Length: 155
Image 1 (spheres, rainbow, N blue to C red):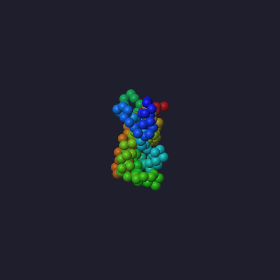
Image 2 (image 1 turned 180 degrees about the vertical axis):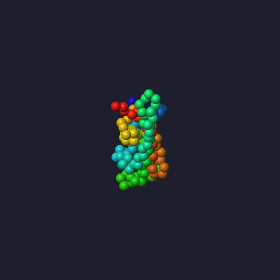
Image 3 (image 1 turned 30 degrees about the vertical axis):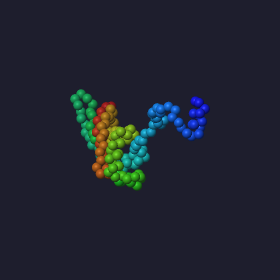
Image 4 (image 1 turned 90 degrees about the vertical axis):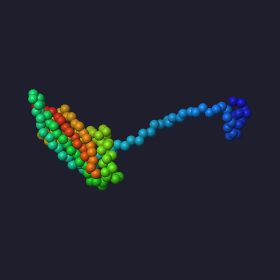
C-alpha cells in the first residue's frame, strides 16, 4: 500500500480503495435452547401419581399365555405445588404432555413402572414386554396411559 493511502487510514479517514465486497459472516458457536423434564421434579410427580392397573390373560392355541393390560397414571399437578416451583396449571400439564413421550428418562421410568405393575396384576414374571404409551391432560392433571403385552414365563 502506498504511504499516502496508509497515512489516510492512520489518521482515521477511510478512503474508498476498492468497491466493498459483501462478506457473509457466520457465528462461531451454535446455540440451542432445550427444555426437558427435571429428574427430581419427575420423581416428585411420580410420587404423587395415582396408578390404576388392569389386565387379563389370553392363551392363543399352542402358545404360552400372554398378559394384556393397561396401566393408567394420573398426576394431579396441584398436589406437587409444595415441592415444585412455577405454576402447575393446565398450561404446565399441556407442556408435560408434549414432552413426556419424547423424554428418554421419563420413558424409561414409565416402562419400568409398567413392567412392575403388569407383573403385580398378572401375579407372575413377564418377559418380552411390549408397551405403547400415550399422554394427555385434563385441566391440571397429567394422564399417561400405557398398554402392555407380555409373555408369561413358563417354568
